[in-house]
Image 1 (cartoon, rainbow, N blue to C red):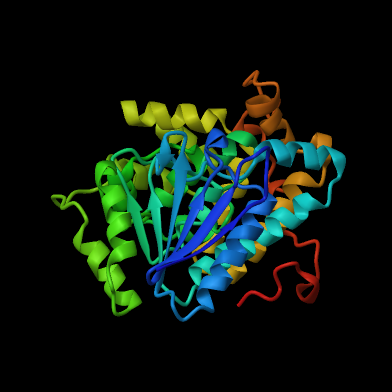
Image 2 (cartoon, rainbow, N blue to C red):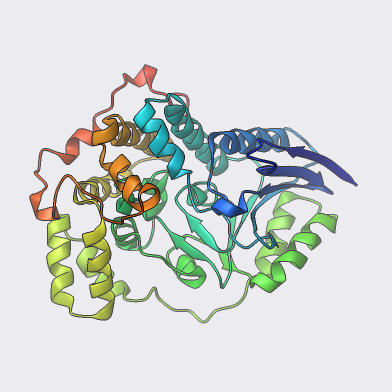
Length: 371
């Protein structure tokens, strides 16, 4: 028996978010494949409404979420937020930009605190906002094609959507490494970093999904147990270059981290240093502080902090580091961002702390209601 409710916020003729109840599970599919399922404000609202509907429906034992690729279901999960929209809205002073981040972070919180199993199929690209709608899942599934990253420092932003919360809880200094450099990791590495729970090969996903829809599970926990029994087994191992990552990225400042990477003289360190040098020097300082502050925060406080940070990232409009970073990557595509500082050694100690000053009184904060 299928209770189908397909929701849409059309761009052209596309139905951007599909949701339906099949058997005892709620199914959500992101369906903006040409943009690698990058999230729009309408998509955030549709996802939120679908999750609340499923949460209140006793027929639904668990919720499944996946992305549609150009060839059909699965392929790429979600590449993040719609950064072209960010750029346009920031320059225009469009209030929907603020609405996007407030509602996206509230959606991230809903997923982390969801009262039913929420299962994310993180095939293909999983970045930025895609991490925000997957890291709170009770079962996080990756594949051999997963490409996971939080590359925001390369557009003058920071790993938001709860990035401070989940990166700070990676083993050792992996969170600092991933957040500062934006380096991509594969599915197996994501498991080792504590950012995924298990791997299922891409060719098995369609049958796994079909089985979840057709099996008369007795509870949400039974859905989770069955999925976990399908994970591919791995020999115990450690994240590549973990000792060197901890040695370098546990240091107290970005400048010290940079100098330590220069001393390592390995392929890994050279790649990490190259990525670090492409990032916004100012935001590298902000991100290091963000992750370390978040280590002692709960999710709601972290999301409130990130809402403060993102306000500061965009409120300068044309002079915004983030607007410039997006321009270079996605608008003009010259890949030559004119950062406010030429090198991390130029960032002054009194600059980055300004990002952590909230523009709102606690009771007026856009996310004051999160607990």
